[in-house]
Image (cartoon, rainbow, N blue to C red; front, side, top):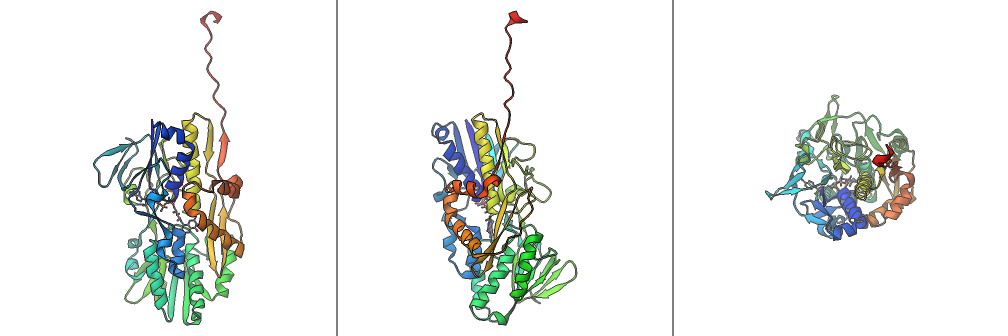
Length: 414
Ligand SMILES: Cc1cc2nc3c(=O)[nH]c(=O)nc-3n(C[C@H](O)[C@H](O)[C@H](O)COP(=O)(O)OP(=O)(O)OC[C@H]3O[C@@H](n4cnc5c(N)ncnc54)[C@H](O)[C@@H]3O)c2cc1C
């Protein structure tokens, strides 16, 4: 019996469970393996859709599906969050239970959360489009009431998920006010701790002229120290300040409590993960995927997806006694919507630096298509398309040579 526990039924956890269940259907039916997802949330949310909710008034319910609907047949759901993950002794405990759930293999996929409390004044003053769909809808309500003034959009602190999203926020705010024919009544400023508009230079070179064309100011090297909600001012560690009427910053993110307090994280609370096969340091039966890892690449759904496929492939291979090994290539592909039906993609791998890609309508259509197939992809749908799209970057397969069989000679031949 091989009990596989997946803590977190978000983008990564669901895709992983679906692939395992699809490819190990016989073993599941015969009870030789079990796959259990632990997750207390009622709904899974399509997080890239928060931008549409915040800046275009999309309904939050369009970005949500009940978690139970997304579970692949044969996969068990324990509809509770874990309060203890003990990898060493191979069990988890859920919040409402005193029982231990034992496992043979575990995958930690709990994502990450906005943590505005890290910066004084931020929770009080800020409205973001990263926390959830309903908070994004509140931002839309506020945006709709603006008549004029200073809008400050950007990054409050690192790390955060989906690196292009603050830039998307600035471009979509521009589009929002332009469509309402009141663009000249608002000043939009994009503020970032980085020294250019986007951390990867090729993309920065593409978007910096767009900020100029759209009359959006960029303030770089601004490491937010605190917010003064009374004076409506943000102040940086460097001693600079900026006034605002509406503050729309992406807060710094952190891991969830059960992970943060565990002994398999680095000093910042991120799971110490091998960047190629995704195992958790010191354990060959424990893995971490998605936003909770400490891998030094962007935290995004595409990465969670490809890491899930990597880990599932290795679990299947191991179980079936194969010798191939699958590795994550570091492939990232974050879309950056630049407004007016245009988008670009931030694409690269561990080996290949980010490419210079200009916004186009085709990219925008691709992004919209990905949104359409998102729910199905969580159940393993369209995997053939992802494999084709990512090509050699999908996952790397290393065929290992089987160790030579030990043939013992009969006594007489000695
Ligand atoms: C505004 C915005 C735009 C984005 N745009 C893009 C984009 O264009 N492209 C892209 O690739 N990515 C994008 N992303 C990022 C993407 O949505 C995430 O990176 C992705 O969802 C990460 O998957 P995950 O499985 O690691 O975490 P999640 O999908 O967040 O899932 C984590 C799960 O863990 C569960 N959980 C939490 N605590 C516990 C616990 N104690 N026990 C059990 N379960 C627990 C949660 O309930 C949740 O279901 C965007 C994100 C935002 C906010």
